[in-house]
Image (cartoon, rainbow, N blue to C red; front, side, top):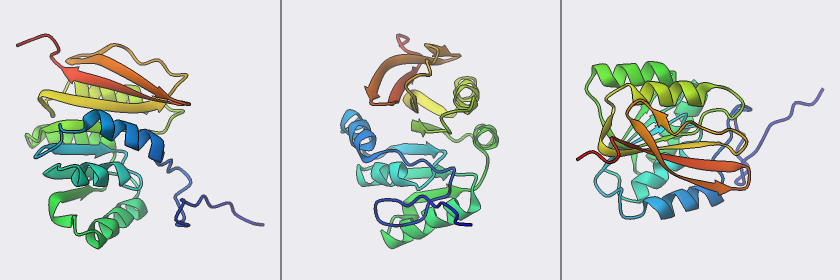
Length: 184
């Protein structure tokens, strides 16, 4: 019996549950964020291959936390960071996302930009956004970007998070949230 292994464009095998953010969506994301990442702290939740967080580093983020539940994927992220000399600007955390958010809050960590790309056909996106909205891990004036399936409508508000914009790319949507929108 043959097993099916998904491969990236470079021929690397991917964990079956890993669905990397497409190049088109990543390019659009960083066009929108251009000029806002210099010197910031970026959080890549459900990091998968780590491509989004590595792009954030290339765009000038001072520090990126990669959170991934798969030990195999976490090790691959570390290897890539080492290969591209980005390890000293990174933290790779092998934890479940909700556990990490609670841990980050307990340790007073804050992030200027939070990106999350959970599995599309689960409720993890709602749980994660709700947990983030009730936490203090997003810095004042920080943003949260959620990548999700186009058939899923996300609420306009999760506690302190308020949706400011959505951008659709085929079956993928990027929903942008800010903390305390309209408050000085």
